[in-house]
Length: 350
Image 1 (cartoon, rainbow, N blue to C red):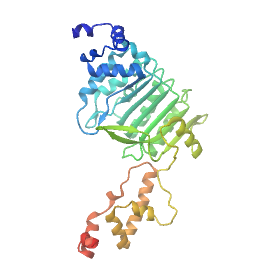
Image 2 (cartoon, one colour):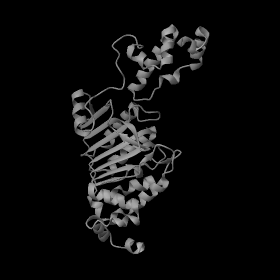
Image 3 (cartoon, rainbow, N blue to C red):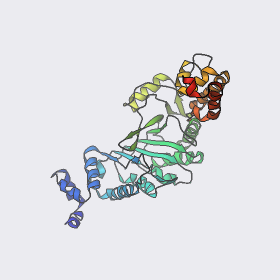
Image 4 (cartoon, rainbow, N blue to C red):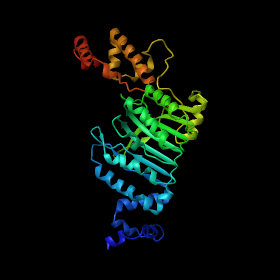
C-alpha cells in the first residue's frame, strides 16, 4: 500500500495533503511530510539545525538532501520565497559533502527571493562556488560566518557576484567578536575591496550590510539571532567609486529599522571609549572577576599590568577580535602573591 502511495503523481499527493487533510500520509515519511506541509503554507524552507552537542547529524542532513533533490518535481516548489540553509555540519574540520549538494539545490526554486546560508567556517580548500549556490531570482542574500581563511575571501566574493546576478542586498553576519582566522575588521575591509573589483558589471547589488549576531541555544540547538544588546553595523552603498561606507549614526539607525526590524536601533561601537585617563576606571574594575579585583586593590604592579591588558583588549575589540583578559593573567603569580602576603586568598577574605 505504501509503495502504491509513493508512486502517485506529485499533484495528487499535494491535493490529498493540502485540500483533503490526509494527514495519515505522515506514516510514509513523517519528517518529509512535515516539511512539505510547512512550506506549502508559509513559503519558507528550513534545513536541519546544528546541535549544541557533538551528536551526529549526518542522517538528518542526508534525508533533507534527498528531499531537496526531489523538489523540482514538487507542486509547491514555485511557492517557496525564502530558503534558510544551514551548512554548519562538520566532522572535525571537514564539512559534510552533502552540504555542497544542498546548496546546489538552490537553483531548483524558481521564485526564490531571499536566501540565508550559515557557514560558520569556510576554508580556502573547499569548493566555495558550490557552497554559495546559484539563483537567477534571489534579491537578498545573507551569509552567517565566523571563521574564514584569508585566501577564501576573494573566491567567496566572486562566487556571490557571479552566481546571484539579480542580487540587490547582501548581508554578512558574524559574532560580535571572532576568533582567528575570523571575519574581523581586516577581513571585512578585504571583502569590500574584492567586492568593489568584482561587482563592476553587477548593476543591481547596491547595498551591503555587515552586522553582529549571537548564538541562542534553544532546545539543544545553536540558533543564530541578530537580536543583540549592542548592534555593530556597517553599511556600504555602491557609488561610482565603489562601495563606500556610511558612518553616521542616523544612517545606521535607519538601516537597523529597515533591514533588522527585530532589533532595537541602539547603535554601538565594539570598543568602549573611556572618559578618564586611567584604563582601570570604575567600569573596567567592576568587569574584573573578584579575585582580580582584590589583586588590583592590593598591588601597584598588578594594577599596571591590568591597565596594559585592558588597553590591549580595547584594541582587539576595535578589530572585532575575541579577547579574554583572563587568558593573559599569570594565575600562579596571583596565587603566590596572596600566599606570600596573607597565607592564601581565603585568609585575605577573612
